[in-house]
Amino acid sequence: MALPPLITLLTDFGAGSGYPAQMKGVILSIRPDATVVDLSHEVPHYDVMAGALLLEACAPRFPAHAVHLAVVDPGVGTTRRGMCLVDPRGRRFVGPDNGLFTPFLGGGRAHLIAAPKDVPERPSATFQGRDVFAPVAARLAGGGDPGAIGPAIVDPVRLDWPAAELRGSELHGQCLLADPFGNVLTSIREVDLGAAAPVAVAVAGREARVVRTYGEGCPGELLALVGSSGRLEISVREGNAAQLLGFTRGAPVVARMW
Image (tube, rainbow, N blue to C red; front, side, top):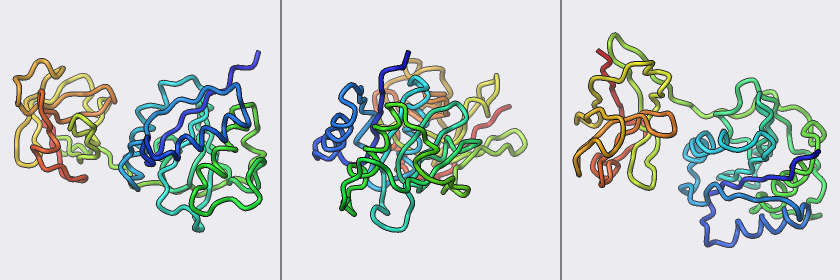
């Protein structure tokens, strides 16, 4: 029995812009039985890394048959390619080939969106999310073959994806993203830490106390913990760590392990 079509949307368009609604209209015109779930339309404008990190956190929580349509696309209408990606777990992603799908590229199959069905005769050069990517996602959600969309892409664009580096007794990483609460996600992952929690974490010249969850800190205290994304994050209980620290992507973070 075929599973009902399921499509997620992630963009930097803004929820109130009307652009996500236009994409949903196209999807539902092709697949009226589809369920469309908004991941976020509040990705910071043009911030491909932020979009990739949100996809990394959200996509694994969905059933494997979901199609993830994502558009954070500063290069819309240029020579940048449109892509359908099938990752090793069979998850499908549709959007620009600009690094947005970096977390899922390892071992996956990428296809160029070449001549998809249902695309208008004169698609907009400035809104390919609506006129190109949405029809492709709808067809895939209805059982379409990714391989029929276009030829293989052997060199998909990858972002510079920072990883933790062990130097003696210290794990060195970077600040990557501030969430809406001001928690700062870092490139140090739970798997990098292993079974042991760090004994100390330093960021922006300040030391954050290591805790298991936010409530273990005092109001206003700078904290370090492994968040629900599986990454080490810097937080302020009932406060905003990004504002306190003057968040800058790439700022160093050091976790002392012993």
